[in-house]
Length: 232
Image 1 (cartoon, rainbow, N blue to C red):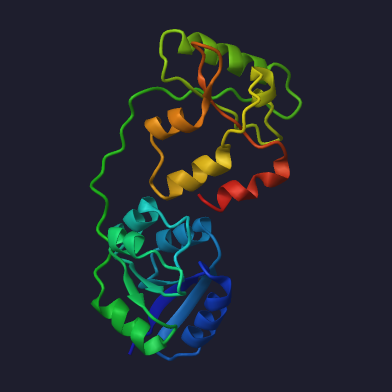
Image 2 (cartoon, helix red, strand yellow; image 1 turned 30 degrees about the vertical axis):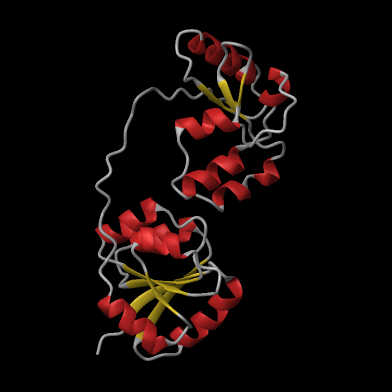
């Protein structure tokens, strides 16, 4: 009998350690990888050798893109309940849940679970994306981005200025915004839950001046960027 090839996902690290130990020792499974983040899971799915994904708990970065890619490759997903799993999210994603990391129950759930259907949602592109880039130390990047966004906003109020400087953003200070506003970490978290849209951005962020662009602040220090990758 050919073993079922799976990866585990550390939505709950403590539970995942027990899950990996039990699944890895079971003759019905071949444990290929223990995934700690979204990038590792997507890489495993795209590798084309998976039969299933077993996630310990439900990580916040498990999003429609991951489900779409799993569905496209006929990879089944089973969630081991850690007591914190959101039932509405499970139902919305169409996932099977088992109450504990029991290999027999997981195998049965994988065998009877349909693969997540590929998404039928077509990405919309209603505007343009402009990136102002330069190597570290290059002068004028922030000023050019700020002035260009201001000019675009004068004719297109939906203009969004994103401070994505990997070495530490300073557009918030340049714009003189003193209010506490969400940053890229918040936007990444909302996007991972498929809850980010134009109305939410407008409501939560601040416009620069009366007719300027809506500003999404960056991170003050480069060492905070791993918080972005955590959510995708």
